[in-house]
Amino acid sequence: MSSSDSRSNLKPDTQLAHAGRDPLGFHGFVNPPVVHASTVLYPDVGTMVTGGQTYSYARRGNPTTDSLEGALKEIEGAAGVKLANSGLNAIALAILSCVKAGDHILIADTAYGPTRHFADTVLPGMNIAVEYYDPSIGAEIKSLFRPETTAVFTEAPGSLTFEMQDVPAIAAAAHEIDATVLMDNTWASPLFCQPIAFGVDLSIQAGTKYIVGHSDAMLGTIAASEKAWKGLDALHGAMGSHVAPDDVFLGMRGLRTLSVRLERHQRNTRIVLDWLKDQEQIGQIRYPALETDPGHALWKRDFSGASGLCGFDFRSSTTQEQAYAFLDALTLFGLGYSWGGFESLAIPVRLKGMRSATKVDPDLQSVRLHIGLEDPEDLIKDMAHALDKAFG
Ligand SMILES: *Cc1c(COP(=O)(O)O)cnc(C)c1O
Image 1: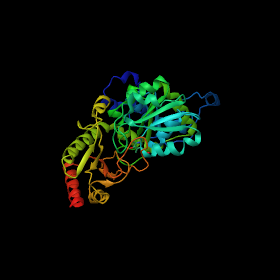
Image 2: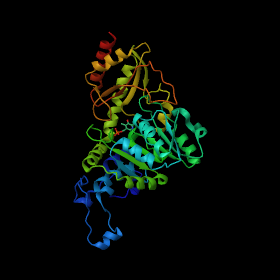
Image 3: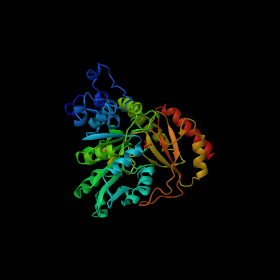
Image 4: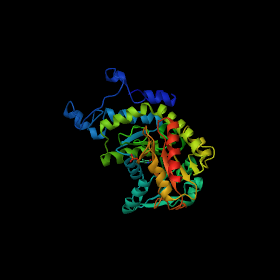
């Protein structure tokens, strides 16, 4: 593998094309090999007992996982990267790598729902106290610190409701008490936000989304700062985490085109939202890249672009029947969870049981959209037709 240090001054698009591969180290082939493996053989028992070779056993890494980890290490500016078998698994491993019995973890109220489920169902049994905080808290997070606070989990923008967080301010406060700062950075992808640069210790991606990018594999990634790397590497090894080589390959393949895909997702989302905001049935649009979004200034400061995931509220008189009729009338937007593939998706936003530190209006009807790579004119026509059908 070429040295990442010599390339740290390359622009992100160049890193995406070159990071994590070394053609001359593998007979000149452009892409690294997809290594299907378990056992690794040693030339002699001396090498075996001293651990004197690069690979020891496939669970602990192989040239395929090294290639994707190496690429992300370079792109995220990390001390090290570990892969996980889903985004949620990456979140669970990252959290477990930095908390122990007796600790207290602060989690943004707007964290991804299954993150909350993990925290609520697994951590209390390990005697780890979980507390949710208002994502807009910023540096005031320090008012929630306890002597046993060791981790602060952030996610920006928030799942389903898209609130931005002042993650650099939270990180600075957390570091004063030596707590580890985690960020679920899936929305921006590692291309549009590199959280380690502004103080995050564990930068998490649901690689399932934009890294894989084609709705055909599950993957998680965790990039660690110098402070968090040792703990992450140790926990990941102890848990026996391993991602199958074909899925790692799909992540690697997706990474190469991340920039061109995101550029189009971003452009299409702009076009669709520009039309949507003027429709009489629509209330607030939720997308921090819009100048009118309350999180716009933070987004502009900390991110270099926006993805295709956004949301909107219907106007306040809208009934659930109307909102669901709209979703059912869509033909180009699939009804399905996950996002980040080439195709457009829509889901109803259901926040029941998902917020405890912030208020939500239980009667508000909202939708989360993933704007895909289709022609935005066709997406607009599809939505216009669905609005007509639902609202008559
Ligand atoms: C989808 C998602 C995850 C989980 O990823 P999986 O690969 O589906 O487990 C985590 N965080 C966010 C913000 C997500 O949207």
